[in-house]
Image 1 (cartoon, rainbow, N blue to C red):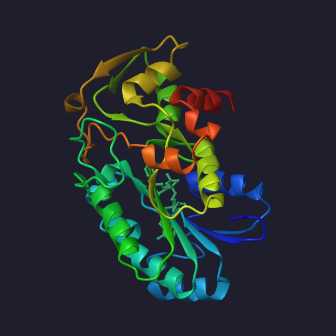
Image 2: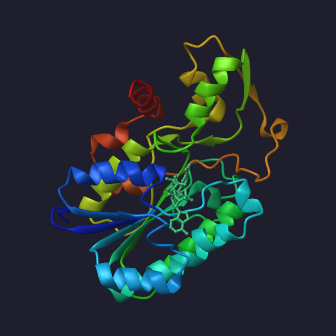
Length: 284
Ligand SMILES: NC(=O)c1ccc[n+]([C@@H]2O[C@H](COP(=O)([O-])OP(=O)(O)OC[C@H]3O[C@@H](n4cnc5c(N)ncnc54)[C@H](OP(=O)(O)O)[C@@H]3O)[C@@H](O)[C@H]2O)c1
């Protein structure tokens, strides 16, 4: 697919990923319409059908989500946004022959696997955020006649949102030491990098479920220690049991990348390491 001349609609357009994705898509000279909840609340079924029928984009990229993982434990609206609303978006996309692109998460997995997780392994979420996102995936998969891609991603950071790296940098200013969990393992992924991968995947016209991320993985402790390697602040590894949070996080949730590697064979983007992405983020 050539993206030039395509009309792409982004929902949740003011979010962290959406902002960088828009910048990346602008390089392709396609028509972009980016809207957030003030213009379209994806939980409003009638509004979703009306907006998609009126705009009829070629591609809808849904970046709208409720991403405060701990608050999802108590806020019922989170499952509406991350789960139920995907039924409306998927049905309206199918009715209007729009390709739907959606983002899901490693948190649909339990954390019990010991090797990188392929797309077809069984989800078993252990927190409400993961449960809601899994409902969203199922709503897409159950929609007849829909052309879609679901990109599962993890540990995102970008300039336009609250993120782990910024938090570590900020805390390191005032504290001599930081304790960071070293038993949760994943692929820290910058949103500019993810946006490049998504645009590449769109051009390749990929459909179905794909895991995306850099070529290697680490713990939150590794990431913090790397980012603060030149700081006076000391970073100490601790187990998750010493840092309780309202939502339990999966321990090992490394997304397996074999499927995207064979789909985009030889693309140099796939060789990028999490360290390279962090370096680019810190330099920017
Ligand atoms: N961040 C991560 O580490 C991570 C990890 C795995 C997967 N993901 C997935 O990646 C995608 C992008 O995440 P992100 O971190 O870029 O998200 P984000 O920064 O939280 O952006 C989400 C956007 O959606 C908007 N929104 C919330 N409720 C809405 C509604 N009812 N209708 C329309 N828009 C609504 C938000 O507006 P308000 O800010 O006003 O609420 C915000 O602008 C999401 O699907 C997320 O689940 C993220």
